[in-house]
Length: 164
Image (cartoon, rainbow, N blue to C red; front, side, top):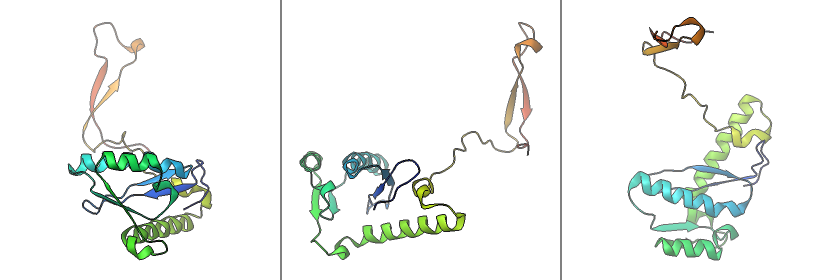
């Protein structure tokens, strides 16, 4: 699907693992990136489930039919199953998932009043790695000018929240 985004991504591709229901969405600049994203997906699902992909079902899109893609699938013992042209119902799970993704993205943009150029950023999760749990141990660094050579470099505290 093609849409220009703020970050320069024009398309998205999603792969669905029927076993684990894992369905990552990859935003890409060109359809030629689909092969690399599939390799990432293959590693992801293999690591998460401990199983390998057995069948890869796609439509007849050119991005799935390159010699390089076919060689990779054969090397990984993955059977490439192509749907009959103009029969989207043969790949109903993927079509339904893509519809759900598009409806979610469309409603998020409408709710936020955003321009459609932010579509690829709409699902990005914020970095909350610096958040801490209430009442956990916290340390405050003591700058060099306020301590002598053998003094503590930090004071121990209890974390009670963030200031506003």
